[in-house]
Length: 244
Image (tube, rainbow, N blue to C red):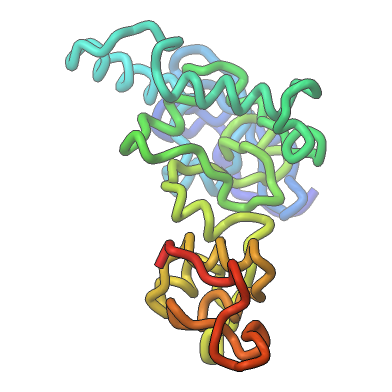
């Protein structure tokens, strides 16, 4: 089964290591552990030793409940943005009738067992930093993963979600266009920032048929030579926009 460090009986935060139960696909030791609250689950040995994993989530829940009590926040989860995010996440991954299912559940994007309950999801993710933030998968080819539940541990799946702004998420889109800037290929948002052109200006240009390079590198008020009329001076009708 391979060499592993024997940590049986040792405590790590609220966890006590019970027994070694195998290795994951990356060769890391998996241990059965018991939390002080009585929950028995699994965890990676190195996550325990480094302090990355210290409880089943009950400690985060305790702190969250204390925060709610201290600051007088309404306890009805159904009224919060975070709860709506969790429900929408489940719907687009699990309901074939949902309009977003094709791009989520329909292509294999799933939610790990650790986030089956809203409380566990909230304990891991915390509150949104601002109303402009929404949930974002760091690796767009992977699912909504907490990185600590038994399912994630068995698959060697790392935590894969964060709260991000629309601009941050645009850098991470599966369909993001790459634009050559100097010696680097940058995501469209990053290229616009480097050149100093508004992102929506580039988007509108591309919707009119401009290439990503033309959309980003052409100064506002000008058009590429390939899109000028025969006189070489006037833009093709509709080729420029007012978003600059």
